[in-house]
Image (cartoon, rainbow, N blue to C red; front, side):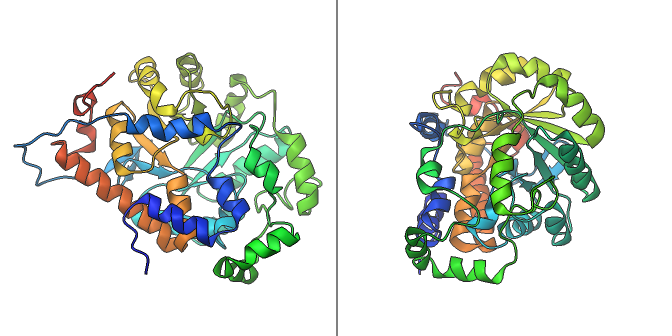
Length: 380
């Protein structure tokens, strides 16, 4: 029996139990993958101050993100195709997040639909929006998220074009996978995954197929998707999105201090410092490298959240120490989902919280709100 002690152990199980194209969809970046690597490498370079002689008996990882109580300052980031990592993956992930007490963010490009996830959970989740050229469809998508009781809308700003992702190109990524000889052989090495896929009815993009005009099948979806990403998306478009949504709005994809001011003017409740997990502009800086400058520019005018590169509870602590009021994990929980389904997502969350709690204790900090640059050996 495999002992799972850290997120890397879940990643190893994920690699063995999920078909290659879906593992590599999660575990890869764009072009040379420089930014993808530096997202984690730059976290490792940050050193912590160990403190002793502090009463750490009464510790808590509890916090708040956009007014919502959370068990720790962590939300599950929007990740497409979760239902291809494990059958009914979005529902399994949402249930695990709900039970643990952290937000789950459903991607526009999910396999299970908004309504499907809502019907299988009891707590509100968040919904992530990609803006398409078909604004009628986008308006309806926003309405569907509101009707389903979603408590926050996460607007992704950094996907007007798709970054060049070599693994996805080489694997001819589709959902569900095309049954080529190579794919068939690979799937045969993942029997539990294959059995789960045979048993579920959820194999297409539930938010899009049957809802967008002219998209009634996988083939028509692929053509529609290639044409629909809105190159004209600008800050001026947020007004109508915010008005139609009417709830908490989080803007994702901020990587430069110059973009902080327009994010604040948009009326968003929070911004997410993110480079899309290294899957968009290769050569861009790691998210953690630019976090302090964005926090400085934002001041107390907007919540600053953090995404891209977190693989441990120590990373969560470091991001909070640098000024983030909340963080997002993507690959860390996807490894768990691919490795062990719903139980694997729970295991990933348990690992992150235990590591956060232990690191807080060794740094002499009892409350997440007390984390600051003073816990870092070199705050710069």
